[in-house]
Length: 119
Image 1 (cartoon, rainbow, N blue to C red):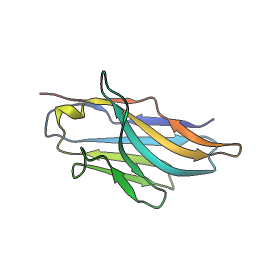
Image 2: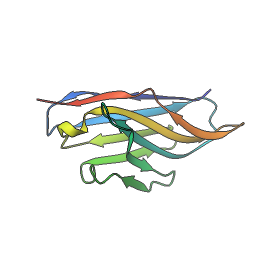
Image 3: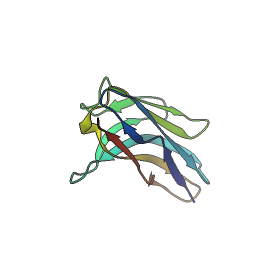
């Protein structure tokens, strides 16, 4: 059984920073791309950032220059450093990972962590 567990969400004022973390655990053989998605109320889930196992990162235009994704392959973790936060960044943030186990390879999702940007 594979699990992704997120942490680090919360309430922050506009212009502030938060750091999200996600740890993958279970009978993992290898992890390919990892990433963060978000879903605001009434909107579809959207990509925020992804990172390959080799460290190549991809960002949504709306977060470029403000958010930084990183990962630690030895610890099976991925992080999202969010700076200069705006009210429009308010959403539930979900961790995603493309994971191969002994039996299968598929996408896994975390339970989500709330980020609220408000004064």
